Length: 355
Ligand SMILES: [Ca+2]
Ligand SMILES: [Ca+2]
Image 1 (spheres, rainbow, N blue to C red):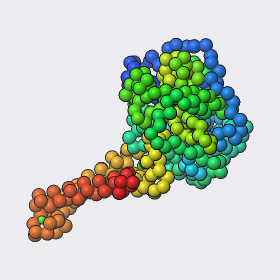
Image 2: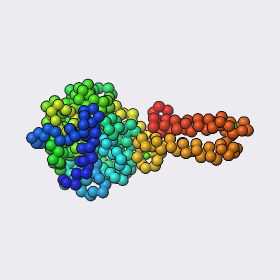
Image 3: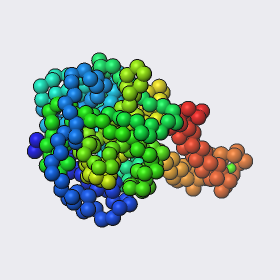
Image 4: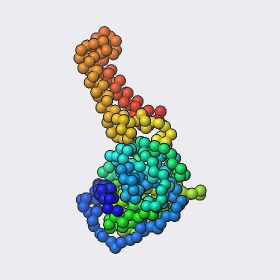
């Protein structure tokens, strides 16, 4: 269990930063209020094999032992697509992550462990307050478990009893008590208004909060990216993605999840269009805000090259309006051309549903 230390540290920092945005100094969150141990996810029970076929574990690709390498959860939403939290994939390359499907017991089940081909991080993910904490992983090959349905529509689900699932820490005092067996617990969805009164501007319409005022049942480190599901007439639907909380299962706080229904377009676009391929401007197989920066920089260097080779030299290639002279009017045209090309790229590669 010790090997998870690095990742736990990373996740702990994420929790700290998440709370820090609104609630004071960083140190408060990691160490205050050490309660007596409460068992499981926290407060959960063992899942049975096949209960949650679409749950996956994210494993550090360099670690062959599934249990030691597990650092986050995720949910299969197509045979070759997983949805998880953006803070689980932030700063990572596809080669850093394997996805393990079809297991309940991380120590003894074999399952299907596959490489990640592409990461589609939400381009407006904010690592400081964890707004837009959602990311998609395209797998190198499809896996066999049945994917989960995703929640759509405007229902708030307030008061509904949700199920949270994961292999995260079962000890709310951060003693790193990680289970081999998948854990599950039931928590009621609370209103975003109540949640906002606790976590401030970290709570947006892309958030869903759940838990008990008295604490006791919650997700914890290692559960991040995993599912919060709601029962439907025919089974279950994915309504939330485990994101953050102030500590775990603390009285007066709740678990915060990414509200899946808010991101319907982002999810559909990723699965149904290959826009993600053209969106990867810097070619690192990760789609994120860096690509927008890279595409703008490409435009700037194109402009500089044109200025040096065509405008300053007064060459024929500088006469864009074909009036026989190279003037500031041509420079302005070149600038417009590059700006429009960037806007066209944004429209085609980032918001295809609008075109
Ligand atoms: Ca990229
Ligand atoms: Ca001209």
